Amino acid sequence: MSATTAFARNQWYVAAYSQEVGEELLARTICGEPIVLYRTTDGTAVGLADRCVHRRYPLSMSRRDGDRIVCGYHGFTYEPSGACVYVPAQTRIPRTARVPAYPVVEQDTLVWVWIGDPENADPADVPRVPWLDAPGWTTVRGMEPLAARYGLLVDNLMDLSHETYLHGGYIGTPEVAETPITTEVDEDAGIVRVSRRMKDVECPPFYARSTGIAGRIDRWQDIEYRPPCLYQLHSRIAPTGVEPGPDGDDRAACHAEIVYAITPETEHTTLDFWMVSRDFAVGDEEVSEYLATSNHTVVMQDVVALNALEQVIAAEPAGYQELSINIDTGGLAARRMLRDLL
Image (tube, rainbow, N blue to C red; front, side, top):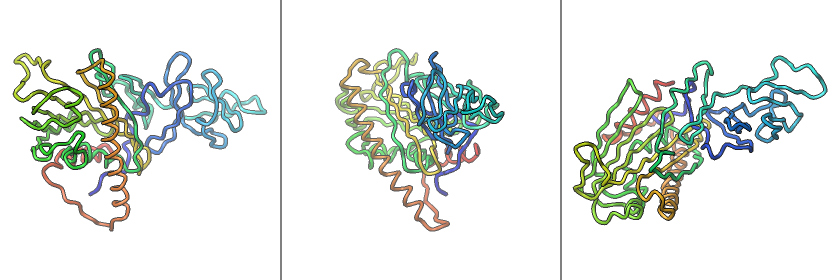
């Protein structure tokens, strides 16, 4: 059984960062559907089907007229609702002259788009990621396209033992692969949790240089995955022996919230949105630059590996059976939840 290529459609997916959506027309493809994103003059983010009803010309290659989009091919003009308000050479607007408008929710610096039946879109179902713009936190971020199915990125992130081998010298140390995991599946909340708690271990350069902690550390990796789109890694880094206080006060430790929005683009391509939020060295631009550069390097190591894996899977014989072991428990649970969403 390989990572899935099918899409769960009645779901919210991250389409862009808030900072990406502005006056310019932004093209994105989500679950095989071309979408044009832009922001109206009152600041509202809009998502429309990126295809004129007349001759399919991409609206993202067109121009704006106030809050409207004027098709760059024949001038069909659309309101933010998707309704066509002008066609060339006639006054009557055909009844079917409209493009689909996608429900959009913008929160926590992310622009989410509902792919599926608009009647089922509930903004309350959009998961929160409060660290991305909370006081006392600083975030670096980026997005990389993958020439691989999104299920491979889910597999990758659910099993962090690969850090030891793929990301050595950045985020990986020998103890990551050597430490057993605990897995919990919360069926009611739709969350897979995978935890790895490491005591008295080597501090990788990613954290040593950014936190300033010298010597060995206690390191926690607590994953929460909400299928299909959102992955959060709650990371705690503290000098060995420093435990949270009895009242939960953990200010002696450093915390990083590492977030991935895993957005299927097509059956074999993925938009990999990555974010690293931290509660330490909050105003230090050098630390921000270091974490942004280092995490981009780590992400690109994954991109190269997963793009290669996609090609291997495409060429393998029918019926090939992969081998799974204990560290795959969380990833297999994630795969099952994805299948259930379908």
